[in-house]
Amino acid sequence: MIKFALAILLVSTSSAIWAASSGSGFYVSDKGHLITNQHVVDGCSAIEFYVGGVKQRALVIAADNVNDVALLKSDLASPSYLAIGEAEPKLMEQIYVAGYPFGDAVSSTLKITKGIVSSLAGIGDNYSNIQIDAGLQPGPVVNERGEAIAIAVSKLSAAYAVKNFGSVPEGVNFAVKGSVVGSLLRANNIPLSPLSGNAISVADLSKKLTNSTVKLNCLTPSYASEKPATQGSKNITGETGEIKGWRSFYSVEVGMSRAQAVARLGGPANVVARGGITGQQYCQTVG
Image (cartoon, rainbow, N blue to C red; front, side, top):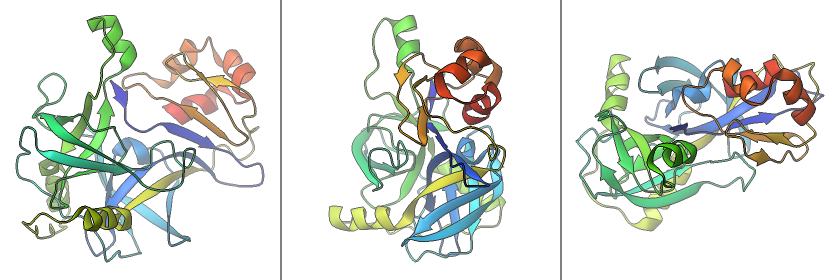
């Protein structure tokens, strides 16, 4: 299984703090509360996002490490937010998934895909997850009423599927159920927003998702004096990647430690030769 978000190394020789990874979050209240995956904000010195071109900061106020969900708080209170749907999702229920995959590499705009609930459990009969066939985006999974019934979290690794099942998976993606998110909010005294109960138009849903979903940048000062990546590199699945200036992309496999990631590339020396960064940096980026 592959952890949902791609780790992104955004380096700048003139910056004291670098964006080491990015992911997506979405507002769940009019008080500035946001939900994201825990792995998106794990180890961040600061979390930034932009609304209307203005930089905002968010703090992690709670994290569910088991289910990979985190609750954030920003001083910016968005008038647009998603209510959490805690009812059990229905098999074949139509859903939309929104987020910012690959950061700004493809484009800086929100991406939305459409699909259905394929299964009411995740890998190993994990009933805190659902399986969906929509192309995975790092953010909310909403129904036709605009309620966030889940948050996208991972997809089945193609390499794992080929090795164990002899075929490449198609549309095998997973999301954490809204009931898990609701429990995290209640545990931190965040009241759940009321549900609308009515389907909304595609145009209204698009506007709602656009205004409530943000791209989060995880900042860390640990790379400030390091050399920026300037050459080709490999991700930990062994596929050749391309670094364009100050961007490099690495897919992240669940269960792979930082040491394993470097070992898979042949050791820190190989990482330096291929990517222009240290083994420690690479491990921190994908860890």
